[in-house]
Structures are given as C-alpha cells and as structure tokens.
Length: 287
Image (cartoon, rainbow, N blue to C red):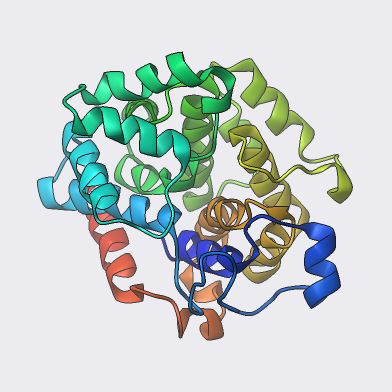
C-alpha cells in the first residue's frame, strides 16, 4: 500500500512527459518534486491511490469485498471533484451514478468506446485485493475481475488486475518466480506481455495509459532493478503515464522488499501514510 502511494506521488509531476524530456529537464528524478500538470505538492498522490483507498476502506469497513459498495464509494469520490479522473473511469461511474448496476457499467462503456476502453484505470488501484485475498486464490481471481468490471470491462484490463495481484501474493510469500505466478491468466495478450518483459530493452518499454503498457513497464522495472528505490525510480522515469506506472511498480516492489525498504525521505512527505499502513494491516488480518 505504501509502495503504491509512493510510486504514484513520485510519478505524478512527470505524467504526460516523455522520457527524453524528463532526462533533459531533470537528468533522473529521484525526489518528490511536486508540480506537473496537476500541480501536486511533494508527496501528494493522485487518483491511483485515491481509488485504491476507496477499495481498502470498503473492505475493512464491511469485513468483506462488496463490489456494489466499492462502486458506490467510487461514485462518491468522483462527485468530490478530484484533480484527475480517467475518461473511461468517468464514463463508467457516470453510468453507475445513474443507476446502472456495478457489473454492467464498465461493459456499457466498453461497448461505446471499444479498444480505447482498455486503459490502466483498474490495474492502478487493484493491489488492496491482493492483501485481502492472499490466502484464497480463487477469490483473488474472482474479486480482481469483478472490481475491474466496475469501470474497465475489457478482458485485458480484468486479467491484468489478476496477474498483478497474483504476483503480489507470490512476492509476499517470498517467491522469486513472479512471472510464473502472474502469467496464469486466461488472456493471451497479458501472458504475451509478461513473457517479454525479462528480455526487452528500456527503449522498447512502452509506458502510456494502455493497460498492457502499464503492466509491462511495471514488471520490467521490477525485474531489471534490485531495490525498492531503483525499481520505482526506473518506473517513473519511463515517463508517459508515470504516476500509474509508478503506482503499479511500487506495489510490486513494496511486496518484494517490504515497507522498511522505502526511503525515509519519501515516506516523510507522503500523504496519508498512517492510514495506508493501518489499512494494510487490517486487510491482512481479514485475509
């Protein structure tokens, strides 16, 4: 949970800047800068973490995973006028707010938007489900699919959430074969991306808002660097949708290296640090 939020906050000022421009301006970003198009303050996270918190709060408050309640909390968050909300998420939550059931809203958006609905708006928020379902592999698959369906019904989105959460659970149990753990999914394109990340070069890594770009960039960062800080720095400096790549890579790196590996200078300015830690503990208790 802390890794997700740290990666989100570190990447937020770099969102929509390409990696060459990041290198020209900063060399390499390793500190909480703030700024960017969202004008964040150092340590401020974005919609990635805000939606993950909505999931975690719902599960902890109810003692169970209820997609209808999570969807309702997403709508409340949308109506609070957040700084940023993705187009697919916004459209799906609009349907949900108008009375469309939680398991139909994302499908209605997909029917209208087609291929452009395969964004990273569900994978960026999915990690709390890995904690809640860490001891129930079947529930982890089912719930990861369901919570993606609320806004992102494209199979690439749904199964990317499953792959991420299976990897997180494997890392929490000390497994090094993270690709094998993540690759057991029913979507061919997700499996193909995961199969390629160990061998591609940095200049081949794509880091835009397409869900498979975020999945690939986050796993590439995890596999090619050997500390929490280096994984997250590598992820956000890829540019593009840097906050979401950072959030997903940060969740993976947090599961691999633990909270003690997160640099104190990042945690010192991180928004909501105490609640993130408390929710993580409570999700693990529920599991």
